[in-house]
Amino acid sequence: MPELPEVETVRRGLEQHSSGFTIARVAVLRDRAIAAPRHDPQGFCAGLEGRTVQQWLRRGKYLIARLDQGHWGVHLRMTGQFLWLEALRSRELPPCRHTRVQIWNQQGQELRFLDTRSFAEMWWVPPPQPLEAVIRGLSRLGPEPFDPAFNGAYLQRRLQGSRRAIKSALLDQALVAGVGNIYADEALFAAGIRPQTSSGRLSPERLQRLQQALVQVLEQSIGAGGTTFSDFRDLSGSNGNYGGMAWVYRRTGQPCRRCHATIERERIAGRSSHWCPQCQS
Picture 1: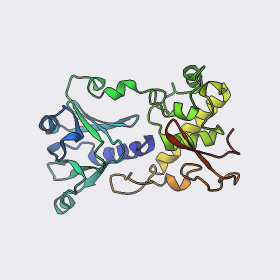
Picture 2: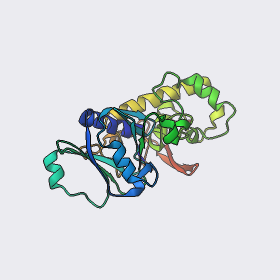
Picture 3: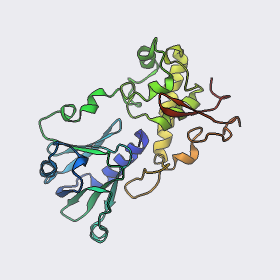
């Protein structure tokens, strides 16, 4: 599933291409892509048509378009992908079988949304309804990693007495929004913490180091355009480049880039975790 850096990369592409985009026509090719209004793709189309995109925002792994009236929400889930097509290319390139939604402006430019596994969702949030009333997952999110409220003291307070593995805790969107498997592994390596460590046993100093490591890893990945191991692409169809820089993620059996010990892998709370047995304790 795309994590914060991948979603932020998509947000920046959407902001570049479609800020000021007035939606002339919407076509829903697969009804299940529309989460709200539920079972009403025609209502979704009617809500968006005529609206102008003023700004693209990100909250955790959600994308939110602030419109001149209302909001348009998107969650990419596992394989959701936007493509930006100029008018000529839009006319020449017919939608493939994975195309779920097409959105055009009056100039014929198109935002095309594809989703191979059909788990992605879109929401039309009419005014004056608050976002959280329609996109329920937003109300369960913790602070953003870049929020000043997300710091070592916050982690110490939230994790005090917890026996949950720190890797599992980092994947909890109620603790911190947007972090997934890739960047939890990478941040724990950077902080020198084994993923199996009980959250409540970490000292304030180690939690502060973890918070700083997570921010640094996320910033580095955003700068590299995110990570592509299978499905993620930006609006132009390009891969993210962080995968080639990863310290431990998906490097099982390979030598650690720092100490040359063999990278190990273990399932923690149902997710694969990668770490260096020498650099992490």
